[in-house]
Image (cartoon, rainbow over all chains, first blue to last red; front, top):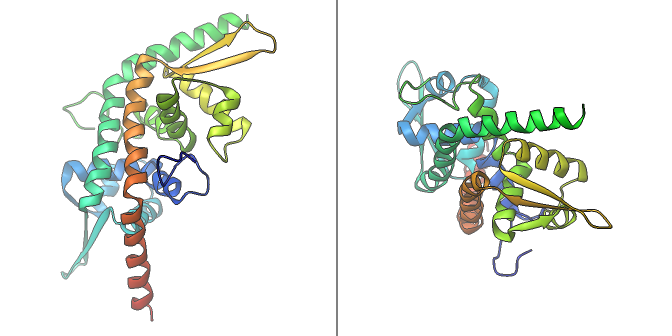
Amino acid sequence: MDVSRKYDVNAADCPSRAVLEHVTSRWGVLVLALLRDEGSLRFSELRRAISGISEKMLAQTLQTLERDGFVHRVAQPVIPPRVDYSLTGLGREAAAHVWGLARWVEERLPQVQEGQQRYDLARAAATR
Amino acid sequence: MDVSRKYDVNAADCPSRAVLEHVTSRWGVLVLALLRDEGSLRFSELRRAISGISEKMLAQTLQTLERDGFVHRVAQPVIPPRVDYSLTGLGREAAAHVWGLARWVEERLPQVQEGQQRYDLARAAATR
């Protein structure tokens, strides 16, 4: 573990690694980035906005992020029942990082795809 | 898909989602952040620095990041054989994002752990 810092994600037993995994989980990244854009969303709105996510995975992801203190869950006292999700102050900080990363990937995708093609061609040539 | 941008990680079939998953993968995050700190590392150095990673997972992670054009692999013509890994220009951009996130998680861990304790206590009280 790096002595200059108290917590170190490179250490398997450091609790920071688990939290990093929550924030960078497949669905965690997308939920955080989306809540940053939208402010507050209902469960059903999140589910519709993130294609491919199952009800179970969305519920698990939200619960983990709520437990870490990143997501605020408010059950509205209305009929039919309605639950809204938004970012906490801490969650907004985490979301700023993953949002920036998501937008960067979208922007740079053409360059990444060119790189992938070059790599695949070089490998094909090497094994011919 | 958001019409204001060409690629959208929220769309399951958009290739940007797969690239985001490479960059945010359990080991991808750690490899990118570490190479940003260290500049260039050998396979064995990476393996030692990231506790818990297997040889197979490190090899797979490096290959994926190399294919995406984030990591540069140089096999040194020496005996015994030696392979160095470093970030490309594109990889440095990606690494800046995940490095910032990793350091943020390490810094904020005490607050996250307090939140987790509050959450667990509230749940325990609610089910008593």
